[in-house]
Length: 119
Length: 111
Image 1 (tube, chains in turn red, blue):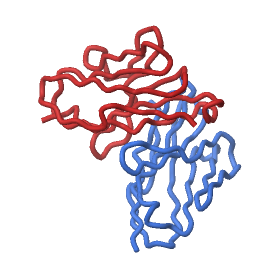
Image 2 (tube, chains in turn green, red; image 1 turned 30 degrees about the horizontal axis):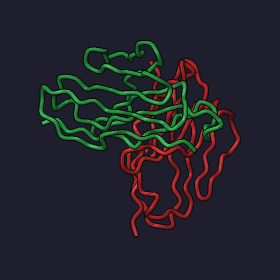
Image 3 (cartoon, chains in turn yellow, orange; image 1 turned 180 degrees about the vertical axis):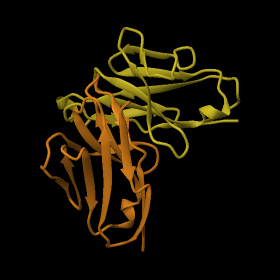
């Protein structure tokens, strides 16, 4: 089955700075998503990363705060901009894998996550 | 607004016990229901359910969907300490494969 990796695994950042998180898949995927999981909370979808076009953001999330790139079918980045302590969360990318890579229908498979602490 | 609710929020059991976790949903458009296990950061996929009444089984874990009651249960028999995790239920509402997640059930299995 496909391998999904994220970098960095964790980071501690100062407020006002920005952090870019990378998500890499070892096979081509059409659907790629970014989620946030705040402490003690469940997963909330930030946006769908669309290859070759602007990301589709969910209500409450904006491009200026969470710019996303998707230059090809195996890679995406999420930037958390002008960070505040409220941005401290786990950030997860997920993909829908094709059957040839072990995917089952529209099941989403998650990367290992990035744990972010903003001081 | 789509909503997924899980119960209980947390549960502590002894090793060897059987547990049942619940998930109910209210969504405009149902496509499938998924269960994930989250131990550290990354949720790992357990089951995807699309049809009512058909049990999915993997070892000591099983799950079933009831579309009439808009709910699903996840059963774990003969629990082990390695089953300690947060169990997440999510519904695929069919809109570009988006998932709406429930609050999760935190399971702790003690010796």
